[in-house]
Image 1 (cartoon, helix red, strand yellow):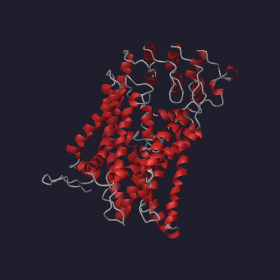
Image 2: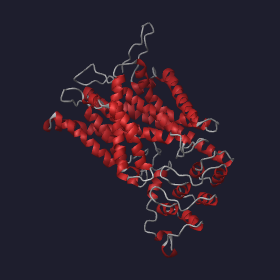
Image 3: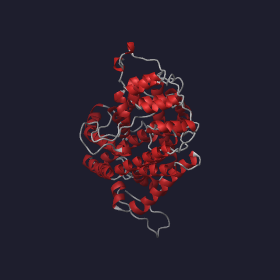
Image 4: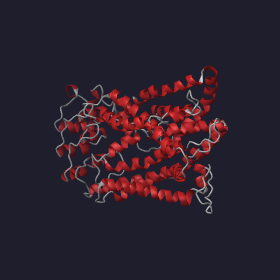
Length: 523
């Protein structure tokens, strides 16, 4: 989605090459983020044979997830306001309908079914691998996630730690309790699992089982030696907090069904990674309703300086909404929650709306020196960016997943991290990419197509090489480079100068081969 032809009223020739490149960079980071998920214990449909704790893949995921989409939505809000100021409200709505809503509809009929197919195939192959003895020492999580009690014995027999600790200090027995898997819990106990270990919240596996309403797992744990929590040996439902976490469990593990959170029977089960397009539809619709009114009201009651200072409201709002993540702290999480259904989770939509609104309000805002405010936001990037990466991020991880996590410390540090990365990267890209470069603009154009198509290919690649006996890092790089290279080729020969490319980025003119240098392309 390239908006480089959208220029502000004060400077008709101005193009924000740095911001468009940064938006493309945020999208391309998604390829690496999703590629990393196969290499450490997670919900992902593909678990590599070498998957396990350590190696930095989980930290890479947290680092990218913690800022990538907030940054993307801030830049989208900026370009949305730019288009509105230049072309008007009607043109804005029509433009976003063609560049956002229409690709989403096409993706629902093509990319989403492809995602379902490759994911199901990968999970089935993973189950078959475990059933036939393909396992790797150090990983007992995969058979638990897959619900394979036989896989537990295979993993432990290969040397896996039956009491391995996850990011929240939970054990595989905690996970089996949360997933309501009595057979798996029995297999773990039979393999020597300690039912008395506590997670970061101080809960034992039995307490987790009662909290989510898993009576079957609770019975297995009591039979295995855990102290019975039922008053007077009665029913599990006699415990006051029995089942309090059942709704949360259903939300986390909600599979694709014919009925979504809105209660509407629909073939739209989930948008997978295309959820960001659906969120953009909501945010642009909100912008179209609010921006003209707010603009007229603002011009009437407040000076430019006052309106600029109102941007500071975004920071406390980020804190409030970050505190809602992870079911308001019921479980440890880093970055924003994910909402892929037809009806977006309110707190997630509002969280991204803060960044979208900040970007929209930043367009046209100017400093006391009458310079564009957007150019000043990252002016201290040389200090902000390294401090955020080297100091704030590790502290935030420690406050969230450490031995002694602090709830509000985690919230504050995560909010500081996302804004630090946002402003730091804006300053860095302003410094190195403020001028036009043909290859940067080319990649920025290609990033939209690449992100839309990458996920089924990433899962296929992960599934293809999962059993290769090579270290995880080369596998990870091979997936990133292989998928990105293939998508760049398809963009070059099948998309850029075709109706698909026009749909995604606007029309493109082929470079003049007789010209001594590449001719800059216009949107």
